[in-house]
Image (cartoon, rainbow, N blue to C red; front, side, top):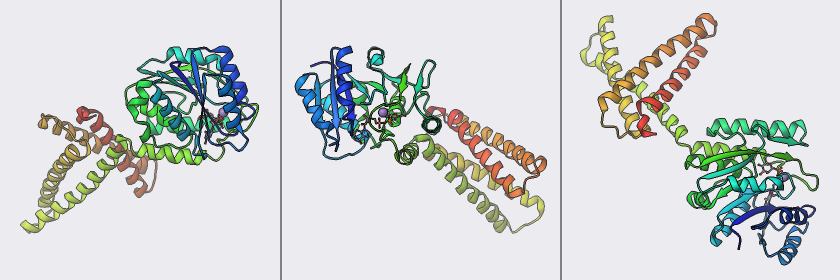
Amino acid sequence: MNKILIVIPTYNEKENIEKIVEAIGARMSGVDVLIVDDNSPDGTGKIADRLAEKYKWVKVMHRKHKEGLGRAYVAGFKWGLERGYEKYISMDADFSHPVAALSSLISSCDSNTIVIGSRYVRGGKIVGWDWRRYLNSWGANIFTRALLQIRAKDVTAGFKCYPKKFLQEINLNKVQSAGYAFQVEMVMLAQDKGFQIKEIPIMFTDRIAGQSKIKGELVKSAKTVFSLAAHKKIYRQFVKFSIVGLVNTFVDWFFFYMVILVFKVDTQFFKQIAKAISFIISASSNYGMNRIWTFRSKNKEIIREASKFFIVATGGLAINQVIFYLSTGIGEMRDIYGLVLATTGAVIWNFILNKKWTFKQSN
Ligand code: GDD
Ligand code: MN
């Protein structure tokens, strides 16, 4: 058995599968190829079986139904892990991923590094796509990189090398994406788990034979990406932070009226005092709830942490004022829009500074 496994999922690739296997065999030695076929109606699975009879380094996995690209890879990688392969390549059957780049993909891959055959780094290229497909891919990349905060340039790439250690660490049963979002999810997991992500430029050539299965997958993949984002800590924290902010706005108002009701004075001066008291209470409870619930801080220096929180809040207040002035004063926007903009700006500022500064240790 070889130590490197190239996993090629196939669905209706009868024109390609034999050629790609031969091309790999002609160039590479010391690698095994696993074809994961989802019972292709065009008989790709039979061709694969023939190839496996001919070459002992070719293996085939037959699956009953078409369950998607992601599921096929998960099954293929598990098969490989059971047999102890060290490095795992994901690759299309259709020659879009250059066989010539395989050896550099493999040699750049080590136990702490996943490697992406990348179209979007210097030297990378795409040949044969019309502008629509190009725009789709480019847009999908920008969108997912921003939403999931991924640093790699080509996050949707299908040509990659993963070390065994990575696949063991992530628990393949927990991979959410059934379809094409799988590619994105794997890069996200690699980044989250602290693996190095290396991109080497490749020339991606559109397939000549057969058809792409990506049509109709775009919306599904976008949904999966949103659900991946929803599971990310930063978005959960942001939601909690906003809830805490809202709750404490009511705490503020509640104590304002309480003070006035209890002391039964309603001179302007006393109202200002009541406002100050309610602010101190709500700001403190705001701090406390964010410390305990949003950021789960274990920092012992509470005074220091609380001071930072108040400094950030003061900055937030200033930003609130500035945005409101710019939008309604100079920009002549209606007040309600100005308020929405100002509050949004202040909340985002408060959140980012508290996350990156006040509660830095909890990240
Ligand atoms: N077993 C199995 N099951 N194989 C599948 C399935 C499935 O449901 N869907 C697609 N495949 C196989 C195809 O037969 C092909 O070998 C490979 O997976 C990739 O599918 P393509 O249809 O060739 O995808 P593409 O070329 O449009 O998309 C490529 O670029 C994308 C980024 O732009 C792929 O490399 C994607 O992984 C990549 O995200
Ligand atoms: Mn392809």
